Image (cartoon, rainbow, N blue to C red; front, side, top):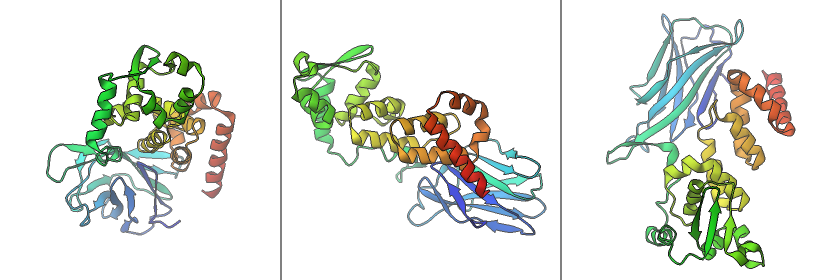
Length: 326
């Protein structure tokens, strides 16, 4: 690994410097977070400073990022010590107007520059309010709006419903044909002499009526982005249970986007339970390769008391692998 390479996961970037030496200027290779390629720069005049900026090209010249992030310097000299810049919120960054952090403490030996992006926003080319780029991939703009609206209306207005779905705290009417078309599990229920076919009732007691409504909205092609993000863990469970593969993959991709110290252990367990390989890799990277396991020691101790033994073994195997190479 060279001193210019930056390692990344979905929202986290780390630049490892083995030795700054007598260098007065060092620039990282470009690294991609969100829609942009970014660079980190170390400059030494009187003091050492760190710069962060996006590379603006002809393809994104009209969409400068509005970034929220935390930047840290973790130094291995004399034990693991961290310098943390106060959280930066909604700062618009341009190539000529980048972020600069002057360090008042000299750095020696190995150290890591760690940038964790909390959000990245941009604005539409014709102006208007900013929006998070991490919600863009979940959109219905390529679907036939008129047809979807009509199918959604069948659900919202209970038009000729022929089956009742009982959630944990309420019921909603739906249509066998649409549910069977979207889920092989529902298709089997309605094609064989099972109680669901005979009684025209499906019991989904492990979902609230709110989550069940959002699940049905997805099946009917009428889901709202914010509802998806609010209920995506319940949606993941339902997608796995009823074999709605496109919903499961949408949840999988979404859960990759906002891994942080508060949710990484939960996400890691979900990755194992629902066989989400990319999510498992990203959680492992966040915890081990990027060293975040040191920031959540108490939570990790609770995790190893209750988590699947095989999963815990994978975590420790990854720890040993990384430490051998350090």
